[in-house]
Length: 152
Image (cartoon, rainbow, N blue to C red):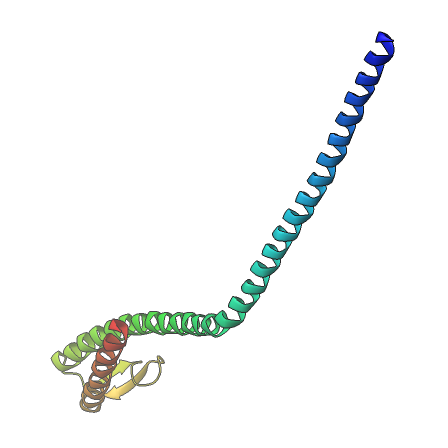
């Protein structure tokens, strides 16, 4: 009798424990399903919002790209202007030196490549002085122009 009573109580405890485990498992499944649904919904909303913001930001990114390209072109133009300024400054100094030398020397003719694109030719000194003054004025104007462009 006592043994049967003890056995029934143990069986009832085990049934109650199993029932509790089943209820806890079912509750866990419900909670997991709710959380997964909530997290899935949140992830979907975030993805949808990102797509929306990406569409809204597209014109800004295009404008940024255009500005970056413009900046690169401007920097390249500035660098070219700096190089041209250096080149014309050097040429101006060389022309000034040659003009001083031509003015100082009393020869009838003078050999120079300044007027003929770098190929030395013989010129009458009076003609050469006039042309060198013109070339010098042109180079000085170029130096001033490229100096302005290099500062921008």
